[in-house]
Length: 365
Image (cartoon, rainbow, N blue to C red; front, side, top):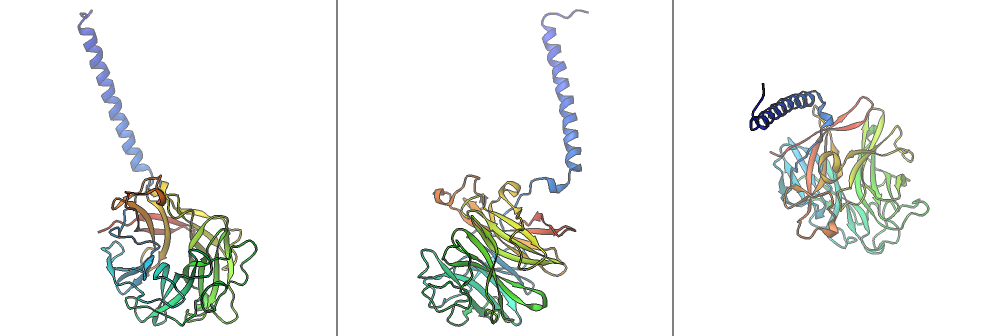
């Protein structure tokens, strides 16, 4: 049979359309079955900020009563509470209303709140003169409740290098090591070891940077007698925000690495069977922008509660409200973007080998 000249193009067009429809249906079926068979851990994770109305950088979160209380970087250690980790989070009165005389400002960085026996301790870093621009020392304050006003313990810093315009500290970093800068200390983090022993981890400022540890008294407000701090990890670049977790027969050290003011800031972890030996332990990525869409995930804190999955709280840069800042974001080139570090959280899962994995992110209520 022969078709007329006008019918041939029409028939060809109809045949082509039919083939396209069939292929599209087959492709959609294949994609659907493949997506359902693919483990959820392979899909990119997406996080949403729990608190973005104001900045909440370097969060320290702890269970309190039936809910949670958190403190962050800022004037007097800003504080927030929630009945659930998903919120809503409510800002409360700042933790410290008055700092000791050795501090030259009320701006507190990366404090850590812990409960020791029947009282609460707040480890904090505050600016000090004598060690160069931006240098800080570490102090400790106490309160009867997590929501009370924290008051400094004594007149001396807990950790402060020699040369600072401050009373002699309990820990002066006597054995800092060769080629380490003579600068301040920040990012204090409490740790409870075997038998109830208390330790404080912190970061040395400058390049190279390092993470150090010192043993404290049982009450956690003084350095233990004859104790001296020692270096755990050293990095050519920036390593900070140490958080130490004991998991069965080994220890896991979480840290932040990179420049805090960009999207490449990230959270890493290391594992060691011995508390004081970390020099050859390689870092592994836990939180990064390319995996979860959060700009600069860092300042992480691990929270464990009985009969519940462990949680990891952290901050990430948001711009124009709750939106993640773009991958090219840099704090020094952010005019008009209204950037701030917002609060995020995720479920933390431990594998049989003791490897921490992010299971899924918490979404705000």
